[in-house]
Length: 301
Image 1 (spheres, rainbow, N blue to C red):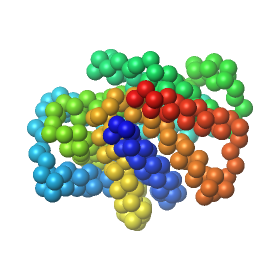
Image 2 (cartoon, one colour):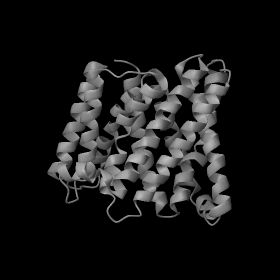
Image 3 (cartoon, one colour):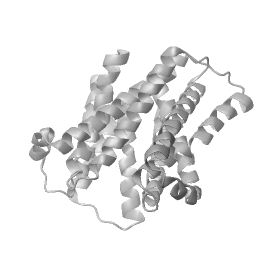
Image 4 (cartoon, rainbow, N blue to C red):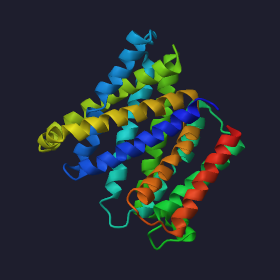
């Protein structure tokens, strides 16, 4: 089994765990604060990853270059923009369709990988991406009065366009992170991923902290008061990101993000087994499609 596969599955599990904790934090602070802790409490761990690999394991630090910084900034800004748009969707009463279209990230990452890096996905990989993306879109509208026809024809709605824009920025950021890591040229995928993560997350932390100080200073005491769960969020968030960056250094971003849809299965497992929640037929169908897409991806990968 290629190494990027277990790394991606582990990263998806950690990201699901981070999301659970962030939902708790959303109850004690605003959206900006809950988003900030992912970066602000994550960057010390990102720097620690680099330190362990360099001082304990003995890997050389790669030489930073202009191409690396350009892609790192593009990725960092793209991720912030994508997250902002996704959170903005939640301010609308009917946000399910928009959220569904934001899940087109793997398909859009395949397009941007071709445009920016000249990477071509195989027919099997494209089929796997399409199957899993459709499965996630079904789950996203499972509790709404929508059918497949409505989902497709609603593409010109405001919510759908915001969702598509979010997916676009997520796709760009994924490809940019892969390009930044590859631009380092060595010494190996672990150190390249760790350095890329450290630079990006410090950049994002400084940018978001400046925004909070300028516009939402009331968030600072709330963040400080919730430092314990925020620290745990930073740890699992940074660990998940480290996994994504390693996987995307080894494999095309679109394929990694397609397998990453397995996170939805972790979410449903938590809902069914821990919270005793019931899922409907459309959600079951979506889960089956995600599993099918993953199996196709593993078969061709």
